[in-house]
Length: 302
Image (cartoon, rainbow, N blue to C red; front, side, top):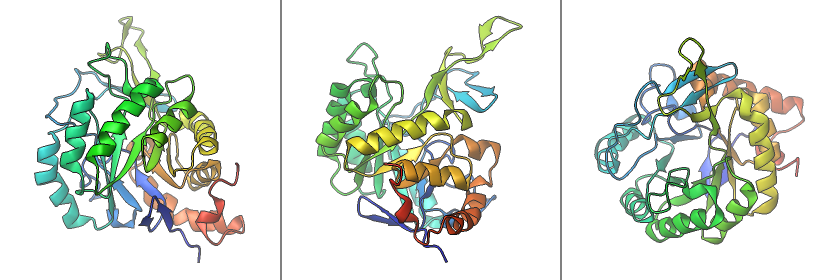
């Protein structure tokens, strides 16, 4: 038997697998495919202080080895999520929950985090949102902005663990990771999506109504792996790895790069059973490597 349990920031998980924010909605959408209680944790769809309808359509474009999306944080708002979606999920899922929080100002992040605090074991701060007070520049695109919003969230979050999800669309992700760590983040999630674009050659226009969107899927795995390895060398806090994971072998690779847990995103949309399939295959892959406890591979490539 291989021990798949891991610990992230003092939270015990039965295994390192969880969906990336957005692909499982608010947790109950996949109940017809498999029992979510087999997962190490559950990530919720990105949530903001007020309800959001999201971006205009079309907002999804298929790619050869992934997809582009520009959903625009469509969600019912944090109060509805707390009052309706989380209680519904708790009825069917007994494990660790990550609430993904977005915002468009420091104050909005802080208020949304304060309301969500304690309702989930982990608050995952999505700092890839544009700051309305800084000419629309994303909070996560520069170290001072990332530090600013992490500081505000840290003051608001007292009960949950605070993880910050980093954008790959930056010059030096390690600089931002160190800034976030210095402001008291308990952990990091990386990477978020890369910026991408597709064009309809019949019309000559972008397929995505917003022109560009977040590119995810198998194609970004090597980029994610490099950024996780770089970041694991730069900080002391745990990392949840994400980006292009699609097999037991890529889970192992990502953990060897320095991740303590792994999120799977776009692959769930291609194959809704990918997570139980990975969990079934993972022990055999680890046994083949002579590993009896999965935590022994964390950071092996450092």
